[in-house]
Image (cartoon, rainbow, N blue to C red):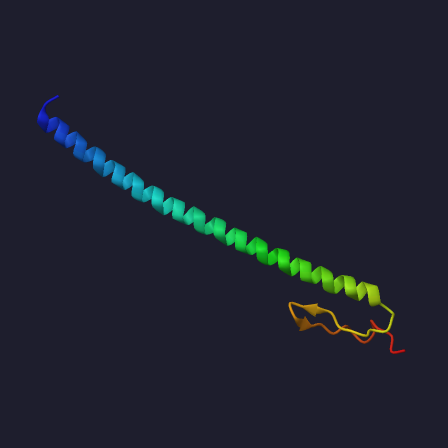
Length: 88
């Protein structure tokens, strides 16, 4: 190998590594963004399902009885239908 070949090959190897590095960075950024989005969606689904369960359990517990309190869904009071609770 002569000096010119080493210079040319080294330059192209450096360019190839830079291009591969940039492509990897873009791909990893997109993957990490999707993973973060999925984790956030899973957290939201978990808390909404938990609150829903709390409201449904309360409604099933007081069905036909006198409703003295209202369940809450993320701090917002949920009113049960009039036919759900007895007025006695």
